[in-house]
Amino acid sequence: MITRFLIQGMDKRGLVFLCLIAAIAVLVPLANLLLPPGSLFHVPTSTMSLWGKYLCYALLAISLDLVWGYCGILSLGHGAFFALGGYAMGMYLMRQIGSRGTYGNPILPDFMVFLNWSELPWYWYGFSSFPFAMLMVLAVPGLLAFVFGWFAFRSRVTGVYLSIITQALTYALLLAFFRNDMGFGGNNGLTDFKDILGFNVQAQTTRAALFAMTCIMLIAGFLIARGIVVSKLGKVVIAIRDAESRTRFLGYRVDRFKLFVFTVSACMAGVAGALYVPQVGIINPSEFAPANSIETVIWVAVGGRGTLVGAALGAVVVNYAKTVFTSGFMAPYWLFALGALFVLVTLFMPKGILGTAQDWWSKRRKPEPVATAEPAPAE
Amino acid sequence: MSTALMSTSTPTLTSSLLYLDGVSVSFDGFKAIRGLSLVIAPGEMRAIIGPNGAGKTTMMDIITGKTRPDAGTVMFGGSVDLTRLDEAAIANLGIGRKFQKPTVFDFHTIEDNILLALKSKRTVRRTLFWKTANADQKRIDHILGVIKLGDARARLAGSLSHGQKQWLEIGMLLAQDPKLLLVDEPAAGMTDGETAETAVLLKEIARDHSVIVVEHDMGFIRELGVKVTVLHEGSVLAEGPLDQVSANERVVEVYLGR
Image (tube, rainbow over all chains, first blue to last red; front, side, top):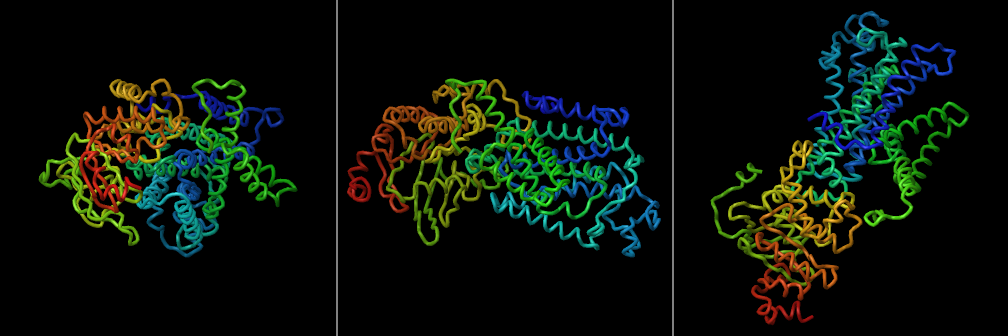
């Protein structure tokens, strides 16, 4: 049943995406590990880690597309779920440091010693266990999304009001995590990681493995999101996006469907955050910054809302552009470029890169309109 | 759904399918409905007319749970208090509604529109792992035939004409298989030919469903040939066959004579 759920009605676009990511998952680590640094096809470790980061963002973008593109919930706080997943992973990595920290305390992370704390706070218990930490990567964002969504969707908070509340949610978490007495390292966050599952985080092989793992999780996230959107539940969710009260009068409990996709999406964002942290080596409260969540929305809009593949594409394209832009003389203008990009895409490519390309492609292939394919309604 | 039924169940009080008594509702001081009473028998088709602002749509909102009345009784099937249920629960009890402005899912195909309306368990889990059974597919095909959209099944509903959307929405009501259908201005914006066909379709539906039709078009109501209720300023002004109602002086004064 699970397999049928994951591959039902797989289309060409999805297959191309899956093959591409699978190929990257195998070839990039091999090109990094096996080829000599002088080779034309050698991939430096730093490049691999950078692309690993992009792929984490791609997973985050897919999770946002699931709620925004398909269910019409414009979450401006998805970065919060990403950061929470990241913190769960960061806490595991902190506990792995053991007595190798600056203060050599076998139990307490450095920042707790520095704050003169005498024992580990209760919410840090269990994070020395990898399975427990991975459970928390899913459970913490999922639970927050569930509780938040339960209240918001039951009270029928929609549209811009919901967007503002999600933005407030991530801002509130930003402020909370900045506080030292929260016990998450204050504004420095969690860093100075040593091991993951006994392997050195800095080692080239570990980085290659993390990259491959990111690809695998991106594939898994894509398959789950796709399974959801092509199922009948996906049709209900699109119906909610387009005509919420009509869906309600058909007998669907709209709040429960929204809650389901919102929670699944938050868990997915948490996984993306958890993969992100060991690859960049730090997690701090700035990940909760409202601007991050808004940037995620831009990736999805640029790539193509409601396409999943487009969201991933948008995340990679925009972040690649960001890397290029911010490392040159144009660095001070990046935010202007990003803003302009959003405005231009909204005005001239409302369907994003993928949607526009698809329209262009189908127009080229079918110059004469077929009797059954009348133009879609103007929007 | 069964729990919703049980929690609001009381011994059967009336043999009618729908029973409204002394229902009132006001918005910001404006009394949209005042002391409205209406009884629909099982299997009955009833036409409701009234000038703009008579409370026709508000009445439908109350029956379908969109609006809560300030006072009065709304009972379904003789024992279920509709004022205590929400839209989804009421829809699952078997009350379907067609809106004045045709509301279909523009970005779904016609077939998917019917599939979404098809009577089935509406839980998250059931829809996530849904597989269209042969019987369901047959039922969808049958409904597509009835509303004459079988050949267009793969088209997006957004590409349909106004009249076709009205029909698709009626088809969605059929797919829901409700005990009671509330139909708000089904002939609005239709050509004469389409209007006549719609009347035939509704009469066919009324054979095994109870139907309430709100309509302005007198010719359409005459074609339906059913009992008529005239609403005025939120309460019932007259009730009876169309000829008798249209001969009523007050009715002529507030509505027909203008």
